[in-house]
Amino acid sequence: MTPLRKAAVALLATAAALLPVSPTASASPSPVLARETFDRLPLGPVTQGRGWTADTSDGTLTIARSSSGRGRELRIRTQGNGHAFLVFPDLKPPGNSFWGRLRLRVDAFPTVPDWAHWTLAEASGTGSPTLVRPLGGQYAPTDRGNFWGVGSDLGPTGDWTSWKTSAPARAGTWQCVEFHLDATDNRVTVSFDGVPQPDLTVSTHQHGGTSDPFVFPTFDRLKLGWQLYQADPSPSSYGLRMDDIVLSSRRVGGCGA
Image (cartoon, rainbow, N blue to C red; front, side):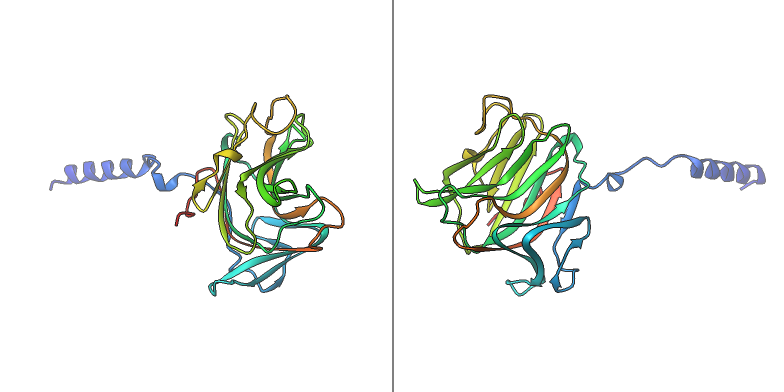
């Protein structure tokens, strides 16, 4: 190769090195907003983890060895109408929509008083006082059981839980739960163990509150845990186990049989 040709080749190589590199799929931002398996946390009482803090009153959060024998899990305990939550305080879901997936086991649900109301997930944000509760339920004495329901409070649609007898709450068993908050129609959908529960779906004009539209706030916060609102319940204390939490701008899945 002549000296002139060598110089030309070197010049081309230098120019190529200076060209910007096109982004690839691997450079795309992760859809995961938060993740917690509890496996990296020390055993015992806990008040914070990666990306979350605690909110408790007459309640505790404790890291324990997993009941499956692999890894660790979170155990939640409350007394009376106390509460204990993990709080994810810095959510900024794209399009104000996100998916949640978690595994949980509730030791027992209330049987006193009538219409006792409980919450396991609550999303909130700016621009509106509305609390969106994609995972909760109520004890219905008319049907002698506890039933899952999506609910809300403090917004223009009032305080409501749209529970359905088609979604009985089962105590003492692990379930994989998914919920989706979709801002395009202020829609909340729920699945248990990979099976959709269409009866639990609520949206802008189909919900359990007043005739006003149900509209999401701009989400920036999610609480996961347990709260019972009525005093002097039976049982007098409540236990909940939780594991494998993922919050994401896309469906996480993993709840199939």
